[in-house]
Amino acid sequence: MWRRALSLAAGFCLFLAARSGQAMRNGAFDLSVIVDGTPLEEYPHDGRTYVEALKSRSFTLRVSNPGSERVAVAISVDGRNVIDAKRTSALGATKWVLFPGQTIEIPGWQISGETARRFFFTDTARSYASWLGDTSNVGTIEAVFFRERRPPPRPMTRGAEPGAPRRESADGAPETLYDRESAGPAQSQVPAPPSADAKAKDGYLSKNEPTDGLAATGIGERTSFPIEWIDFQEDPRPVARMALRYEYRRELLRLGVFPRPGDELALRERARGFQPEYAPDPDRHRSQ
Image (spheres, rainbow, N blue to C red):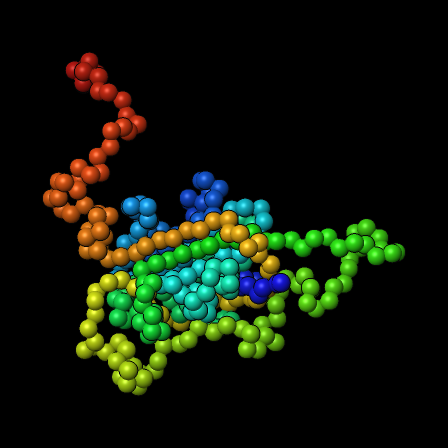
């Protein structure tokens, strides 16, 4: 069954010249968190990869497909699909489609076919997940990549010539662009945060609301980000899965991702027996 997925509209810059360095070095798919045009440094720790959340700062998500075939990628922030804010499996999620060699930067929650609202780091109590009523997965960013499954070739009918174009029924049509103007209710919309009156009513973002001080993602100002719906049939087996955890610096210190200042024991835990260096030469030092 064909699934509808999202692609950037033809008139939008595809960031082809801004591919992630990691993706270009090792030929792999890539997911990076970008602040002010620069990827946040990643810190491996206990089998996970962490980035430092910078409070109140907007960020984008850069995803790369260095391969020779287009792929679909499901992306979630705080456990919510960034396209429609739903909780689903990666396979069942609405996905972005990346063409060969393409890198895109997703600026925020996609609230319409033309507009996104920016991601930014904030406290959990002030987050979009809090307003949606489920903060059980805050602090996570995940991307799952799927290759395209090509339909088997159809037998030629009598009189058909090799290479001749064929027409297909609507349910099997290989159209690449989906007409969003006729999509109607099928086009997903991210729930918008409440109005100022609603905020006062339910306490969302109230100055008196207690906060746990842990990092999560908010839904910020609007930005133009036009997209197109296209048809894409993914292979159900993902080819890559990337997950990032983000926390404020104080939590990264508590988790041991960063050593505490003056914590000699934590520094000792990072000691290694080998590293790519050579033994010092006394004669060389004597001659200097």
